[in-house]
Image (cartoon, rainbow, N blue to C red):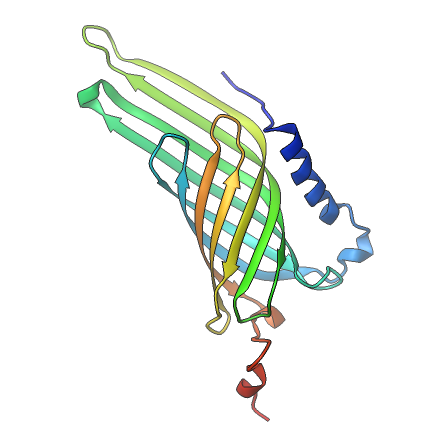
Length: 211
C-alpha cells in the first residue's frame, strides 16, 4: 500500500526554510551562479536494525556569481538497494530500495584546494519500495510489497579534502529522515571542479604561480 508521509513537521519545516533561503532569493541575487563541480558519490547506507548496504549518487554543485561566498546549492540524485536472502530461515528474499531526488544548501569554510569543512540541510522526494517473501513450512510462499513517495529533510556535515588539481575528494555524514526508514549515510565523493572552482587558493597558492 502506497504511503505519502512527511517526517517530523518541525524538522521538515527547518529544511524547507533553508532551501527557501536559496530558491526564494530575488533573481538578481543568483545572477552568475554556475556549475562549479560534478561529483560522483559512493555510499554506505545504514537503516535501523540492519547492516550497511551500498549506494551511489551524482551531484551538481552550483555556486559563484552573486551567491554569498561559501554557499552552494547542490541538486542530487541518489540510489541504494538492500537485499537479503535467508532461505534456510524461511526468508527467500527481503528487499528495500530508494531513489532520492532533491537538493541541499551548504555552507563551506576555508579556501579552494585546502581542507574545507561544510554543513547543510536539504529536502528531497524519495521513491521507496520494499518486498518481503516468506516461505513457511507446509504452505505456499507469501510475498508482501510496499511502495510509495515520501518527502523528507536531511542534514549533513562533511569535509572537502585537499585538492589534486581539479580533482576534489570529500567525506560526509548525512542523515535522511525518511518516514519508516531513517537513513544514515557515509558518503565518499570524487568530483571534478570547473573554472575558478578548480584553482588552488589560500596560503601557499602564490608559490604555484609562474610569473
